[in-house]
Image 1 (spheres, rainbow, N blue to C red):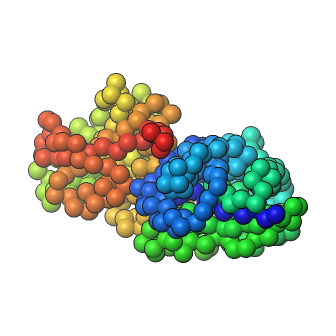
Image 2 (image 1 turned 90 degrees about the vertical axis):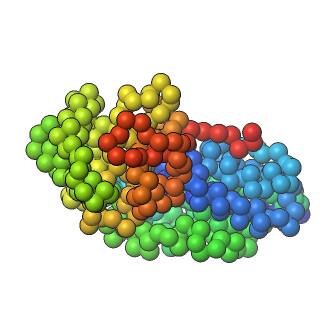
Image 3 (image 1 turned 120 degrees about the horizontal axis):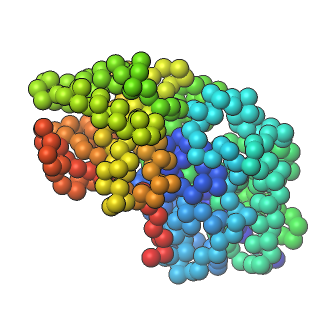
Length: 389
């Protein structure tokens, strides 16, 4: 009696977008990810499904709503379907790990059987629990069709097991797009991979892999597509960099230096940095300063807000996809502090910035009070909401 398992990768999540390492870190789905979920729902509309399973992480549970909700089925979560545990690498940027732990990162990308990091899992650990989980699901549903939602590296290693590949050999398998679908057929102990990593339901404009290049040449992308962050020394030798960044941003946005108070901006940054060096972070591409993000940990904190006074990418680094990684740094900083919202100000006539922030989930909530020039107040939700509500 044959059991069919549709094995589906979660929709685009924060780690995919912000270029951060998310194994067991409980990331949210992006706005583009929700468009992928809608496309996935259309794909499964005419496919009979008897049961739905997912890992217990938000990004898989949310993606699974494409199937369980329209078909009015319960969702069963299994921890064994989680992504590989990344230990001390969790929620660090790929750029940081490439710089500080490059040899082990190359081992991870090459699926080295000996790869491990402190507090994480090995590929053998992952393969074992994924095989047990999938075989267990198939055994509970003989002769039925089941949708199972998991994660990219987890699915890749599971497919390798059922192809009869060793850990080292599994490096030859391709990467799956977000919401890509594979089909497995279980007949007793035998497992057949009918097809794998199919993303034909995704238009190119919402495909994650169509918009990113890291997977084509991982050696290049380690250095050229992923940022890392460090505190900016605004009280010392990097004060001029901060001042000039503020000056260039003001001129670029307002086309005049009228009302510019560079010294006031610098003093504000210094006060924040003295309280917490993380409040002014420099974005680095290899050893080059390419931008910065400033955070005010006190403003509107009682409202659950993480306030961003300044978000800046230098002219030479613009229009290269780096800017969203600044937002990822803010999310990574504010979410552990219990903040549910990011909030910032943006000039209403700054069309480029307005489109950028709206693209990544910000919405206008009003006019910013007490400013030298007119500014919109914009906000983005970064908390958790159960999709079953």
